[in-house]
Image (cartoon, rainbow, N blue to C red):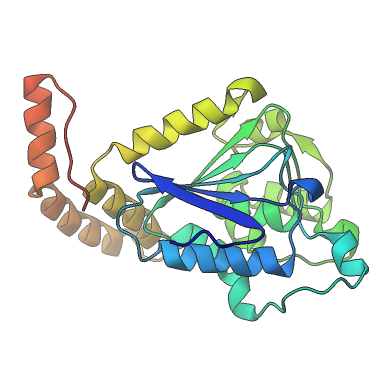
Length: 259
């Protein structure tokens, strides 16, 4: 994947992809170009089997505070986005890769929606959050009303949207929006450790597990159990399961292929 983007960076190594929002001079506030480039990057990632985990984060002190209002209000030239570009939360949610939002700073508006669309969310102590949309006379975008109730419950999600106020990482942890909060000075290392742990798991089992969660959102319980059981039988017959069993008996780390 060529890294010829202007507003984001992407690199991949060891089964881990890192997508960094890169407008640090504006706290990584979103422009049409960033929206388009992020959509393009995620679509390209969907075709890669060598990347099993994606970390989404921001460069510098911000994660993404939402749209760059100064940029838009000044009428600065920018690429025209299309409805397809607003599929970013769908891509983050449905990619075969496990997606991690590493929230290193302010996370609001569209950036808040992107974080909610990821499989896992972790925050630095200094991170702050705000749905923010109603504060700028917006009804919202980036699928927050679909993703957020599944994370914090319907009533809390409505509160966060209808009464938008800034809240801290500790509040996000208490409501279940993020899984853990790490001190700023160890945040990057902690995220790396989590990503490496996931990337060291069976690639086959990891992808099937992700698909199980996606299917559970659309199927009734009986139908889901049928699908899950078929996959479980297939996964347990896979070479990765055999290797995991051997490694357990031999008291060594398993060695999985990239598949």
